[in-house]
Length: 342
Ligand code: GLY
Image (cartoon, rainbow, N blue to C red):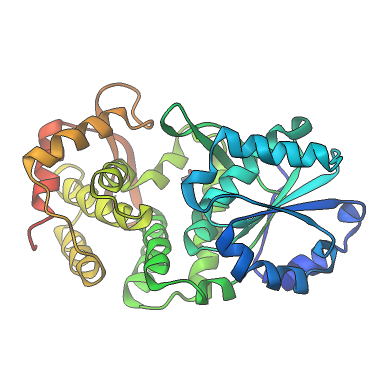
């Protein structure tokens, strides 16, 4: 795996300085973007970063739709048509989907070219753009084909957060709360106490994710703690058609409920989180009938080796246990219980 990887918090100004350095001197660039970042972010990028003024750009569909083999092939064709060599650099300007696609394309092109992630959503800044996971969806399965292939640079431009709709900010905040819940009780307290997102909290979340990725770059063990809330969350995302971060926020509530029962989490942590979450999110009402297809999804969740459900649970804030076996009845109990007020 390519290991050189650096995150710069100084935004586009830091990128401008970085691309003047020797290692980028002869690079040519192609920017991958979607219709939203074309409109809202590209003008800032082009006017702020001289090296990118001559860059080609490729527009791809917004959201998960861009993560297909067909779209990847279109980008590869554009690179070939433009004569891109191994010194070419892809610049991924967008949310998690654009970063996933762009990293995937970069990993495959001429056995690997450099790429720069410029995440434009909070969710991508604190999660998808960090840690080298790249993927497309294939065979009806999300993220089924991909590589561990870290970006050479990830640029955090805080002004992009200010332009996001509130629901999108909340979506990213849930992933920050997740990272904090499994690693850092102080950051967790800051996030629950503030409606806004302090820049320091973004920095700390990225720093924590980078240190976990460094310890387990290929996701064999400790990195699994970042899946807290995700086994429930993915099933909720699909079943209730909720955005990823919001579904993970609800998934964390179910995981905390089981943590109180199974791994000794103090019940006050569950109750406080439940009160906090309900200020922002309507928890869907799940019936036993709803839960059966969700159980199917959880059994087939890629993080579970066999037809059983394994979850990340908490012993305390900052102390996570990975691969805890959870029975179908415990899943039913958790999903029925979280819809009730604590
Ligand atoms: N999104 C979880 C991870 O990068 O491992």
